[in-house]
Length: 492
Image (cartoon, rainbow, N blue to C red; front, side, top):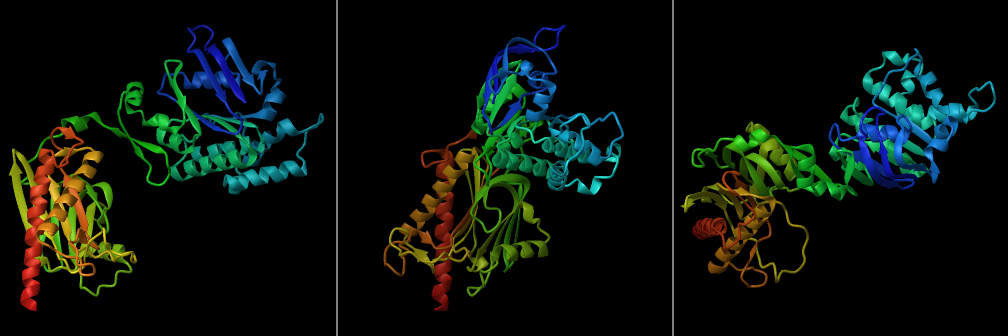
């Protein structure tokens, strides 16, 4: 649809800014152009729109030189939406949008047909500007003006839509509304989109392909996985960047890290925690926010948290709304839900075991409650319904270490291995199969690290961290089960 062949161009009196780029934008795709300020994005955009002259190479539209098109021919094919919101005359919104129909009007006295009016009304409705149709354009806010200009562009019924940072004046809601709308037109009308986008995360979500422009040349052209190349992005943008997966869409999202993070002060692990317990809750609070991995009722996945709560519930607790219940219990205790890991257990909290160790200078702490009434051998048990979310063996593990996300997973595996070994040595059995249990049907765990010290992806059984996890979890689970079994035995 759009082809650039060894394209060179820029401003007449200066050295060319675009230096021999090749690119083919396919019909019906959303193509995003990325790069820092000064990389040549706007210059390339102006070359494609014909605002700047091509010094060398070719710029083709549907196989024809762009320069061979008349203004009217280009207007029927291409609509342009830029950051510039100025309009020379004091038009109403409806009059602005009617300009988009001009290339399709015939005769000397061009006038709006019923079809023109229908299309104008359609685009005003979908861009949510109908309410402003009789209002003067100059009286609108920046975001409202941008939506009006988008409606004008869509009213043009173009084959190609050129966008120069179109969401700069929009809030989050209208940014996503605009791009959702453009994607819908791309899919339903075969619209080809060529966009300069400033936000890398937005580009990742919406673009089919993208190009990274640096010093007038393309470093790379590809799909959104191009944005997973952290070192390349750091070199181009001069910012520390971490790429991670979007939790819903199979696209990467980027997190920028301020350089002041490298200068953070270290703190004492032992002085970092406060501990509070009653018959309803064990609450461990960290003064510093910790990096966590958990399968708790709330705070699940990999996150940053400060509060760690294990709530006691009765054995006949109704598990229909555990998330709602824990949030309510946290609010009652004035604990922020957004920075909390919350678990449940039917085990008496008086059976809790708190263990601390310091191994070769590295500090560990574990808080464990455990019961084995619903012990399960995962290799033998028959399929059953999804278990309730009440935890039986609940483990909170805190480590003064710096782990990658992979290291957190590795540490979770080490903790699980230690738990299974404790059950094996205590000869805890699955009551249905009579075989040694590997856990219970409702185990929960949170592993939290300070992110101090040297970063490592290793926390397995052959590492210092792994050994420390193993010792502490084995000891904590063993003692907690023994306390539980002793109390149950006394009750019998």
